[in-house]
Image 1 (cartoon, rainbow, N blue to C red):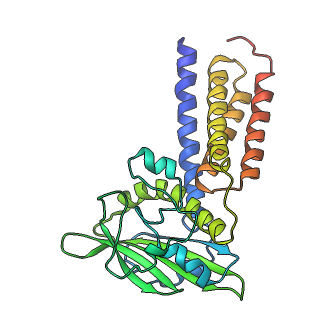
Image 2: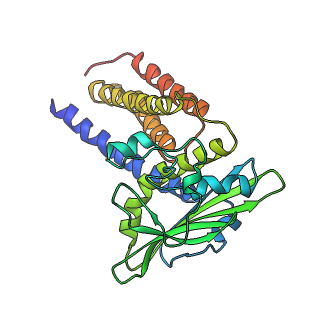
Image 3: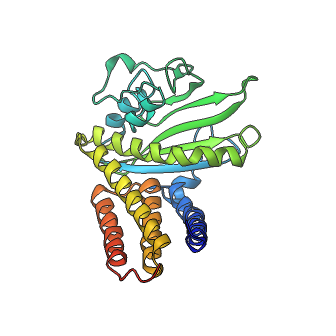
Length: 287
């Protein structure tokens, strides 16, 4: 690689890192309260801890009584985590999300374990108020709670309910650097979980093609970004490939952290494709 291309490579890498940093800083303001109102964010919930917290919510066309059984069977070896089973299972968690209410897990009680994976049961049910609150906590060796996870059900009317989830951490046991690392995979899995619960309760199971399409759209945005990067390095007219690359990075941030509907994901990918074709068809000029 020539010196000019090498210089452009590191320059482009710096731009990508800057866009990722600034873009995530903006998107973070939204994904930490994805779907939640200001009232829901500020509302106290059982077990709230004194450190970092985030609140997410979704509206479900059902009553609390209809939603409750799906929450009560939460956990590995039970009803699952309602998220990306394939991703969790790549890590060996052995998760299998239920597509029906499982009667054998409807007698959950305070103190019961909520497992992350087989034989990894560090959290225990801390609150159960039928059709209102369901949550669990992980504690340190002294028994002090360090992580709290709580669901709340709030009726809007006779047919609609807000499902709110709150995670909070002890500020001494879980400093901001730790919770910052946790929040990135957490938002991906939690948004999917809320959407899955909504679909299950409303009797609208997602097509078997939904998750593969989500993956394909994400990979397509990544690949188009890499192609834009190659054009950026090798073409004298580098400005248009740079625009295509930046659009790819922004699209990846949105796809990863804001859980847009599948149709919007496709539209975003088409926008990246359009910018890439615009850059590719430009005269390459001297290298």
